[in-house]
Amino acid sequence: MKTAQPEAGDGVFSRAAELLNSVFNRPNADEDDAAPPPRSQRGASLPSKASLRMSIARFEEEGRFSSDAVDHEKILSKRVCLNREQGTKFASNRVITSRYTILTFVPRSLFSLLNPFNRFANFYFLVVGCLQAVPAITITEGRAGTFMPLSFVLFVDMLMRAIEDYARHRSDAETNSKPVDVLHGTSARPVMSDVPIAPWDLGYDDRGSRNSSVGRKSGAIGPTAAGPCWQTLPWDKVRVGDVVRVGNRGAIPADLLLLGASPEAGSAWVNTKPLDGESDTKLRMAVAPTSLQLEGLRGPEVAERLARFDGTLLCELPNDKVNDFVGRLQLCPSGPHKFGGARVTVDRDNMLLRGCQLRNTEAAFGMVVSAGVECKINFSGKKLGEFETERTGHIASAVNIDVAGVAVLLVLVCCVRSSPSPASHASFYFFIFRSGKETARPRLARARAHARARVRE
Image 1 (cartoon, rainbow, N blue to C red):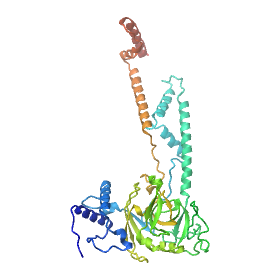
Image 2 (image 1 turned 45 degrees about the vertical axis):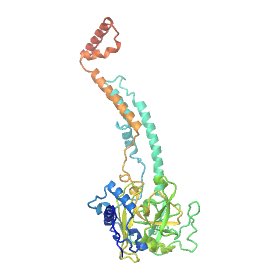
Image 3 (image 1 turned 60 degrees about the horizontal axis):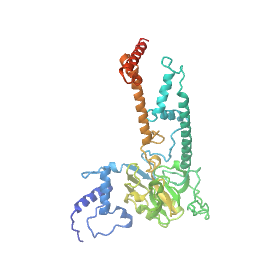
Image 4 (image 1 turned 30 degrees about the horizontal axis):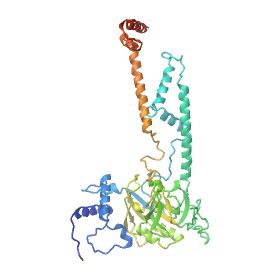
């Protein structure tokens, strides 16, 4: 067997290959004319020089590893179990985009509208109204004259916020109640007697609506015993580690690892317009060990085979990078399938992200990797229901700073005006002075006399 001679510059790529292989535990290929790996192991082959260069640049930019050592636990620190109970508590698939509830609407909206860092003008008129109500310094006979217009402004703004938040509540309820078929009959998901059973095969018309007659002609609506089957659940009941089925033109309920598809078991097409704005469909590939076992299977055979899968996915922590994913799928060697113990690399081409739509594919089967606020399209680093601060634009921020500056200048003028020095009082009457000493002196004298009288009072 002939050994390839190293070329100039290959040392960098050799080291990069070793680093990436150490991350994913790939077997290293040292010979050029080695036999190609089998189809089940093609995901573990060495990457090309171009992909190595891109991976190195991306990993070093994000600080995933240095040139000296690789922190395996930091890169692949999330563990998701397939068809088993999870050892870690993950976020639910429920999404809340609304800001307020019935109890928190009034206090939170008032705090946001009267916050001097967001709406200094409202805060200023509130302070002025409070000062007008003080008898010792009032000039309006104790009546807060600014409270009436300020109340009208607050009422209109709160009304608009209530209308917008009500629309968010309706949108959240509609999204969280969308149906999806979840695999039941495993140790993590036993069959539920009070949940409707979906047909074995999905059929969709040209507009994407489910045809209920498909799969029912043979009388196989669902199993009568506690066996693997598809049961329809709302989106907010989906959990990390579940195996779900999405039909043609159906929306992806969570970030999924593609295990297989129908009729082509190894590929599926998706529309990613909600993520990147591109309207063309993109090809997504299923992981080889699972997709090969689903080839040629239909009806209940697919559910039974999916329920027998057992493995663990090690992947990166949730983030908002829709064009990046790093993971490794390890199938248990004790499984009943012939690919037990297989270890394959998972990247973005194996993922179906939430918000995308399945196209030109009868059905896709995937394992839920991230749900709810941990999905890439919803990721913000905050917990479910956590109150987000109000975002203001550049113009609104500039106006707020200008109003605050005017108010500070007004306070300084009032402080100087109220000082006990007569000279400082007289200096504020410069606007009534006229040119010439003869006319200015009498006016200055009257100003000083007025200031002294104010001081005696």
